Length: 317
Image (cartoon, rainbow, N blue to C red; front, side, top):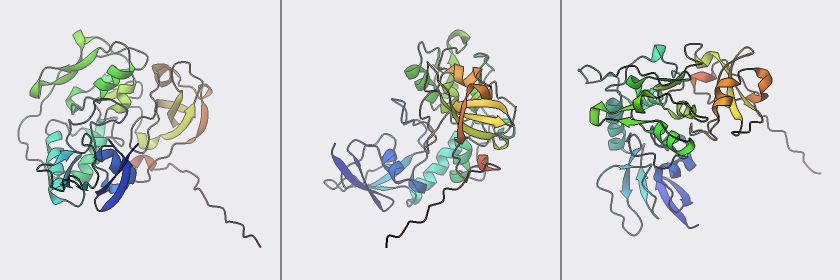
């Protein structure tokens, strides 16, 4: 495959042709990676909805070095040879991102103290890193009636930011999707058709892809804060899925099971509902060791891992 060279925040990187700006930035890593609330690399069609990943293209390509007139969504814009992209070094991008965060929080309730997603919420992190200290919104927040979608998954539509991740997940990895986006405009909501229960072998994965607390695990609800638990990688021989999970432990009790995520906070391999909801005994699993937690995360509190110590090289005489 042909390679393309571009510059992002004064750092040159070479990526495969057809790569998006966002994924090119992810290959560099660090603070220059634009935030993304709706894009999910393993879900076809995702991206372009939350607008948090907007960046400035200061030069379109070496053949046409003119800047793009408006900020572009990095999750859906392919790279070009000689392209120059500005993210953290561009004041317009940072100011626009603050406005987008303010927009996302217009209807999102500030119920973090009682939300099970607290401590691992992408919107919480986004608001802290890119948001304003106060909001200009003076009107009553949008609210929705409570809908029961089953005994395993709790839907808090009031917290939803309409990222569509759960819809794409159900559409692409499950048989017979029964939920989707109803109505239009400010009345849009995630709901099930004729209030059916979401019940299939992989339905629980909508919990893992939700960036906020709109879809949470009923079996874990209000049991503990994530920073009081001990996450451990584990696996089992499962005939339905990969069987590779993270167990959230309190002593010897398994409070929650979810799929493993990579450094971009995206699920590596989706897991079945049997692994997620039914296997809550340590005897069901082979424990591999502590889950790698970013030390800047609140979950890293009281979570200790043995440091990797480089062995001294033996000098040959």
